[in-house]
Amino acid sequence: MPSSSKKLKKLIIKDYQIPQSRLIGHQVLVATNLMMMIVILIELFFDLSATSLSLLIPSFLVNLILLIISFAKRSIKYLEIAHIMVLYLIVEIHFFVNPGVFHILVYWMPFLPMHALITKGMNNSKWWLLITTITILLNGYYGQEVIGNDYVIISNYIKFTSAGLLFLLCIYAGFYLLYYLLGDAYAKTKDKNDEIERLNSELQNLNESLEERVHERTHDLNEKNNRLERIAFMNSHEVRSSISKIISASDAMTMDEEKKEQLITVIVDSSKDLDEAIRAMNKEIEQN
Image (cartoon, rainbow, N blue to C red; front, side):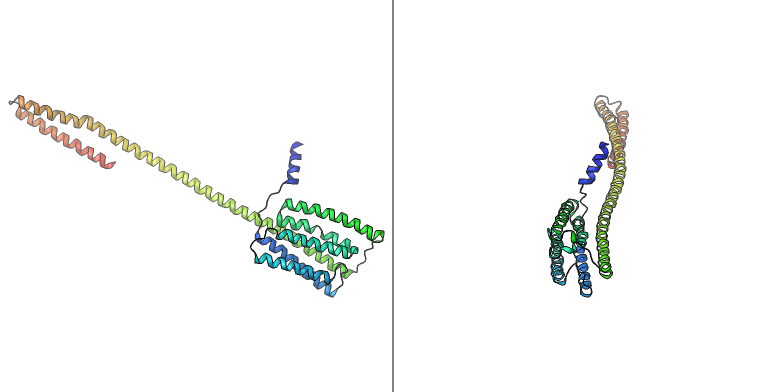
């Protein structure tokens, strides 16, 4: 049970900070302007009764200015918040001008926290959900005080169909942008994971190569140590032995003339041994 409550708490307060694409704010503004253009066109042919050109055209121009600013500047920190505020004011102005359209505007209010979720993240969306909830309650109270129980909804099929199609397009656009944002975040995450896997593969190959190099280097060092040991052995035995024989024979020659030829032979043989030992040592040294 504690585990379930912890997961529920995490679900409520967790903000995953989905990587925000710079273009997502532009796309929201483009979608908003397109929807307002459609509303204006519908209003030109049919009186929707929920709005008027005197309200729609200024609203469209304000959104158009925000769109131009968004394309003129690479990044504006509070542009998305300003856009949500503009949409909020548009809905509220329509309501206070004509409280009788509350039944229509109340369905458009949920797009505000959705807008915040798409452009600014979960935490910001929660605040706009709270603001939207309070606004709907206050508008309902205001409508009750102004109109009372005589609030009647009257609409023909053409108007209601037009509003329904527009609402459908707006819902689809909102979820499309959310899907696009999540897909973009997934693609970026996948690219990062692929890059991490590639780096891990390179690191593994490098480690394997390093192990081979260490093994080869260790083998070379062992070979060199063996050669040095052989050189040391030859120096301490063969070279020193030959030198000792030459020195001893030279000393004996000065003391015993009768063995001179025999001692010369010893000196010559020892010199040859010494020469061979020195050549062998030079060969070992050259190999090192």
